[in-house]
Image (cartoon, rainbow, N blue to C red; front, side):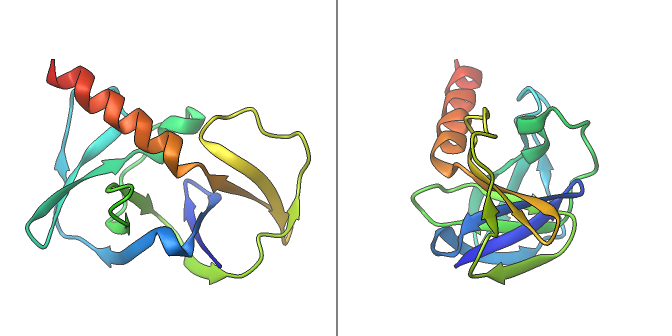
Length: 137
């Protein structure tokens, strides 16, 4: 099962087992010095979580960040945003062979005439950790 979500008119997928919760937030605290990789942090039940800028992966122009947040399980400990629909699907569609040269995407699928980008959460986690440690120095 997969959680599919829209961001910047693109459709992304993550394994549903990696999702801890989905919620709306009233406040995102910006992080202005993080090369647009992180847009800010959010306080979830007393814990701060970094909010990853998915637009960074595709060099999309920065758009306003949605208040719809997808919190990932403790293995990852970061948040993705969605500015559109969020749904659960059992099938991602037809896999497109040899179409992926992005280290943050595991595979690309085509479902109902739309591309679905299956995110590589492990590589995103590493990028966030590198960014946070670099900025801390």
